[in-house]
Length: 379
Image (cartoon, rainbow, N blue to C red; front, side, top):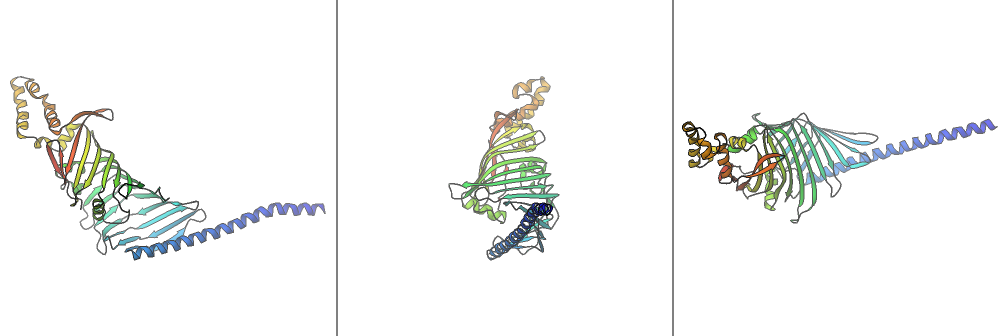
């Protein structure tokens, strides 16, 4: 009798926890599938609303998984077409994952190639890359987006000509509180390693070498005047920012090409025709390389260049005479150019440098008294 009672107690001790686990598992499974179905229903409703607004999102195939702790959605051959903006994009595959306990954080991956072009037309550009990952935090007031792309390669879709390349590109953005103009402020951080943009070298004129040679670029900035972050042609987005009186505050920017290092701060805006306007204060390490790179010697006034040509002859007559007249032979042109550029001695990252101001006036770029080129309108 006692053994039977003991056996019954043992079965209860084992059976109750097991039953709880089984019931909990059944409830969790039901909850997960209910949440997955709800999410799919919400996605369908969102796509319907977007379609009525002129934006169409499509997947050739779609699957939902990740049970039991995640929601994972995979979209095969994703495409989006915005008829109002007149732009379309497509990719090979897109996947997104969200944890059950943190549904407002979504991480995703996209598989190449990505094509970009006019709505209803042939692709204008194609982007290849080794990998592309992103993370979106969608809590109201703290929206953040981080994207990392390895070995991006942008090509003209029709000709196959390379437009831009990089070793790695990272973008981080975060919306801040509304600005005084009623528009949200978008904080931006951009890191690009070993980037080249051969397609714009000719367009930039004397600034072309800065785009043609590999460079590391880091930018921290605040964008004012953005109405919304949505799929639009860049030209339309820029027009809206210009119309809202927007501007880009560059709080910290850095470009490095070999020994040449350029730091920049300032603010830039757009004119009605899409040209740059504003000032950037540059701090340059290895100013002689920048002068040679931009061919600034050729832009010096004739009388300055004539004096510089006399230096070798003066040194032949009496060694050192040219240096007395105009600094050392190798440094003379640099000293004169810096003076004409309005350069001021400075220190940057522990190295000797020169600080000067680049002024943009309706696209025309000028340092001191020298016009160094013109940035073409951005739309």
